[in-house]
Amino acid sequence: MYNPNLHHRRSIRLQGYDYAQAGTYFVTLVVQGRECPFGEVEGGEMRLNDCGQAVSRCWEWPAQQYSYVALDEWVVMPNHLHGIVLVSDDSGGGSRTAPTSHNAIGVAHRWDEGGRSRGAREPP
Image (cartoon, rainbow, N blue to C red; front, side, top):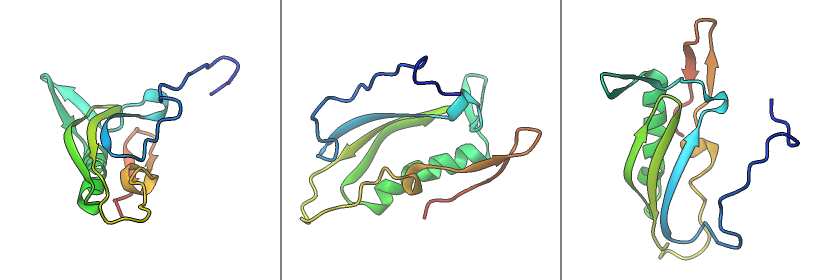
């Protein structure tokens, strides 16, 4: 359980930096509790299970939805994802919806007693 008196995690974000601006971003998403719901490494290769495949589809969705988002290299591991996201200038003007909401790249699970996923939400 999280205890702010014991768990001091400082932000690595640059103070004052506008992360909505164009740029290349290295992103890491980690499963709460570091459980391994996305699959396993076998013979040096990652084998995605159904949940891991859903995470993969969710990771790809923002680049399909938003013209100013592109993906470079990325990998889903048993309990986390690493990826490089390129955000270009939005020449259309006006505001844009940030593709970082849980609807775009998150996956919700329920687990049965055997630790198997009982469903994952697909990207919208």
